[in-house]
Length: 243
Length: 107
Image 1 (cartoon, rainbow over the protein chains, first blue to last red):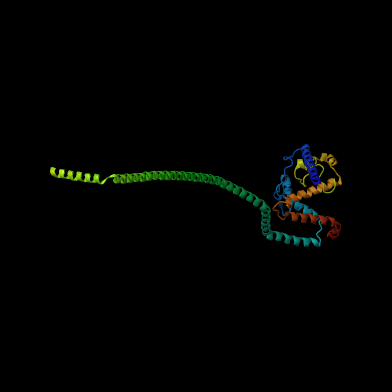
Image 2: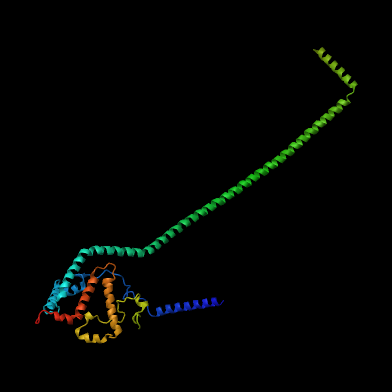
């Protein structure tokens, strides 16, 4: 319980701090992008003779022409040397030989080293951007995969619909099968009843015929038989006489 | 304003990211456009406290850095500039001893 209270009070403090900061920035003015643009990393400044800024030469151009700065430099050097403000002691000649070596090395090795360093700079920049581009590519891939998944989900809906229709068809088939079964069962029973009644009637008829014949045969006396026989003979003779 | 603090005039919400090569105070006439007659009053208006002086050197250092050292593909120019500058500096501080190596008495 205490921990929860502490959490809540901490959250409240944080929110008030945020509000305070926001109000402070709002009160003190908005960002001035025109007079204070975000600094960008530009190209290096141009130099002449390896180290003298181009601006120094441009400063002379309007007043002395193109050769002015060089004339000034030579004149100044002449003045310094002539008045021995610049003293040519033993170190001066050491310096001269060093200068020759440095200029020769810069001219000879400079371009190769510059190309190699530029390549390294590009590699480092690419390395630093790598994770960012990788992240962007990964997110784009994820979006593509999500779209494919949605497309597949739509396919699933079609599949479910087809399955439902399939089940309905199966239900229909089962219904019709049972209907047919009922019909055939009923027909079988009715046929049985019909057959049964036919059989009973036939049996009863035969029984009755047998009984009647037996009784009739029993009822005929010998006299009657003789009379009938005589009658038959008389008829036969009559028939024969008529021929 | 202690060590490592931003200038008093710098306001992040207005000025954006801090540029160490930039002066955030109220701009005066640039030195190159000051007339000779106004030079006295121009210097009188300057803040000559040690902090302001340090700020001047700091801004100059960072302007040089941004122009010649910090760009993506720099040449050998900043190294030669450092070399020339240090040569001049050490020549000046050693001038008292160099003077004795003069070859001519009269110029």
